[in-house]
Amino acid sequence: MSVRYFSAPGRVEIGGNHTDHQHGRVLAAAIDLEATASVEANGSNAARLFGEGVCADEIDLNGLDVREDEKGTSAALVRGVAAWFVRNGHTVGGFDAEVSSNIPIGEGLSSSAAFEVLIGNIFKGLFGASVTPVDIAKAGQYAENVYFGKPCGLMDQTASSFGGLNIIDFRNPEEPIVTPVNAVLNDFDVCVTATGASHADLTDDYAACAEEMRSVAECFGKGFLAQMHADEFFSSIGRLRHLGDRAILRAIHFFGENERVSAQADMLERGKTQEFLELVIESGRSSLAYLQNVFSPADHRQQGLTLALALSERVLAGKGAWRVHGGGFAGSILAFVPRDMRAEYDFTMSSVFGENCCRFLKIREEGGGENAFSR
Image (cartoon, rainbow, N blue to C red; front, side, top):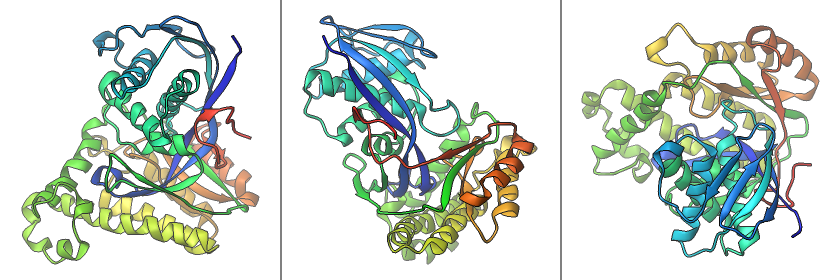
């Protein structure tokens, strides 16, 4: 049997901070870091994974029930993706895969989503499943939610599965609308800076963002903020204060951020780079002031994200852009850094957050698939 090659990219979130869980829009891009695999079908019903930095796993695909002892492992993700395929009428089978990844874990670049999309494309490629990039993203989300045991939306898997730079509209989260954005940012690098803080014990902080936004929507008989008109919300703020002012502020962030995604894409396609950068900064300030997801209120002394944003503003003001990246509270920030300032920015951030804290990235046009690799 011949060896076949598959890959799937990580992703960055450029716009739409905490909008997806309210059925809003995000602006996301695949990046030139990836999970890869060289694969052979093995004629059995066992998936065998091995490789540097990968736990050697043999997953018996004859049994696709959730296994509590597998939760939090790569085996759970393989079993979960396989279960989604089978439950949706597709065939799966055994394979041997040498897997590797250069996507760092815990830096908000979606290493787990890339792995899920990789496995989905292996099943598609080896066993002829007629599935779309959205289907593969759904399989990954299902595996992560049900088998791995981590709640997540569909943004990460969708960005990895499609590749390129896209607006992803989750108004119908079962069938997200993916719209490619044509953009050229030749004079800038996308940089994600890891602040070194752990995401551990932040589940309650993440959940509170969604819960508080939903509490506002429920006052209007809606399930999610995207189902409302912004004017209706703003004219009614006075009667919402029993929810707590933070819930109102987070809803204000949602309505502004959801519209900002469309404006960012429009500026990029029209070649208005400076206006785009200003919208990125505006997004970050909204997250800081209204969404309030740059540090955990449970540990207010640790504010690595806020510090990284302040340093970025000092270096890049008038020349680049900066914002919190992903879920927030800890982790990383995103910046657009002029190419001729790359060394200066790297030195400034590394002197505070440690060597190699900055990752300078390029957008990868290819999504997950066979023979689709970063160039």
